[in-house]
Length: 297
Ligand code: HBI
Ligand code: FE
Image 1 (cartoon, protein in one colour):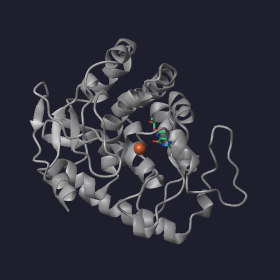
Image 2 (cartoon, helix red, strand yellow):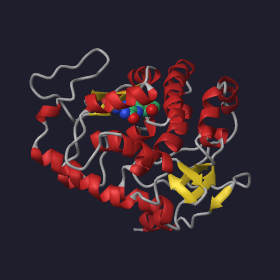
Image 3 (tube, rainbow, N blue to C red):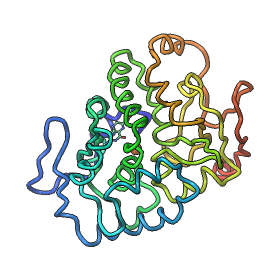
Image 4 (tube, rainbow, N blue to C red):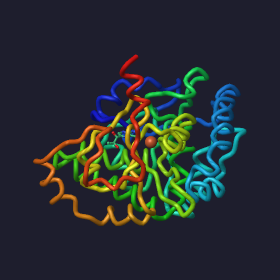
């Protein structure tokens, strides 16, 4: 979840293991569902309720449908065993618990085998709007509903397989940008307007509003090579969101041989997060006011 290597990030994962918990070679642990305290379930409830109020008319139809069919509700942090039972029947995916960020190769290996690694911990009451590592609210509320969709299910598996290849070719940074601008921060054009499908947006109260309603960010048509050349922000709202026409556009990506593209990326420009190019399909050009105000203050 980081433009540097997940390796470095995982090394200072701050959410340690409770006594008696043990980590397997693939970094998975027991979720320890019985160990969540009433306060922790309460943080989930706060996050769940405010996000559920916000998402109608903002999240894409596939997100809403996935959420509807899963055992996810306000009262308790979901039990991964019950989520996996439903997911497995629908798309063959499972949710496995990890202590936080895991090394890139470990992450990809899980995805390639249709296991979604989810942080088992939940953010503290004073961190509701910002945290560095993916917790159970981001991973389960943000990602798991989309994994109920067969297209996303295949796309994320392909990302895992592609990640292992990209690592061998030294092109991981470029591939990670595709994940970032689709699975995490993607927007989708629906008949009735632009909607959210990215988990980083869908699990964020403030960015759910910013990404769709603010005049500040650019909303540009997704283009694979363009995205692979584009840096992203990990510490603040995105300056640019890339919009796809439908989820099938992602499935096509899963079938492209990236090797020739990686070779092409060895030369040519890199773009900054806020750049708009003459060749871009502009859905909405942002005025950049949000980040400009921050830079000036
Ligand atoms: N680990 N648990 C977890 N979740 C992620 O989203 C994640 C990770 N490790 C590495 C990683 N993401 C990214 O850096 C890769 O997608 C490149
Ligand atoms: Fe994520």
